[in-house]
Length: 280
Image 1 (cartoon, rainbow, N blue to C red):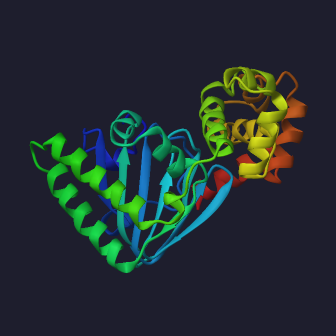
Image 2 (image 1 turned 30 degrees about the horizontal axis):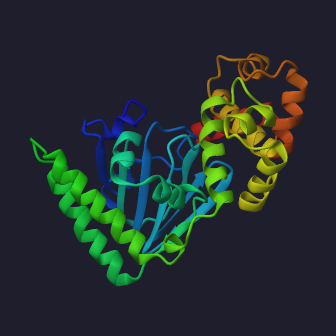
Image 3 (image 1 turned 45 degrees about the vertical axis):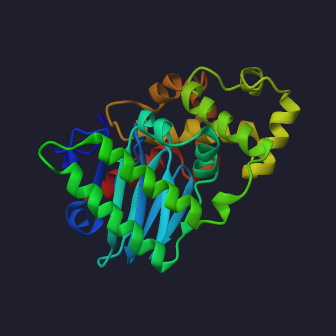
């Protein structure tokens, strides 16, 4: 997990688990926006937290779980002093071994918070504690780790009415579209490219995306690009024009207007706010 914070560099396994109670004390909140090269689950058993996932600010409370997909731009915005629970990180390869494509779509198509009964939340906490014991063992058995994580994921599925619903074609198209955009947004910003990749018409793609996330495909592609630009703006050695060109916007002024339309700030204002957060 090359992108993992150095705070968590002690583990070298494809699955990692961290106690929110133990780690929140030394994490400076809000954390910088980043695009992790892993998926993660946040399970809150006490207190609350707020996580930015792409452009959405998501609140997580007691006995709730949030899944964040690899490729999302994310940041921990708030965490209450009494927060407890676990954060489980796992690479895409691990996830693909444990879940079917349909289950993946259900988990990640909307980045929704999953509400658990107290009984199921306690069950999961016990399981995650077992997982933690195994992972932190000097010679962890990865087979046991995968089996425990798979049991936890299946428990979440059976606990949630939302996750037991069938998958419609629009949700499947939206999931695949998002995955493609995360891979190709730098070079490809036209709807036609993604429609061709998905073997659907532009009109059908537009209808599916609008129905599922309430935005057009063009709006979503622009949002992903601007979120990536926010990451690049954290590198103070790069000029705004350089960042615009790096994202394949030939006109920096157009990039600036698009950035303000989506974020409410100009790139310069965003960079100033970021520097103030760092110094604060």
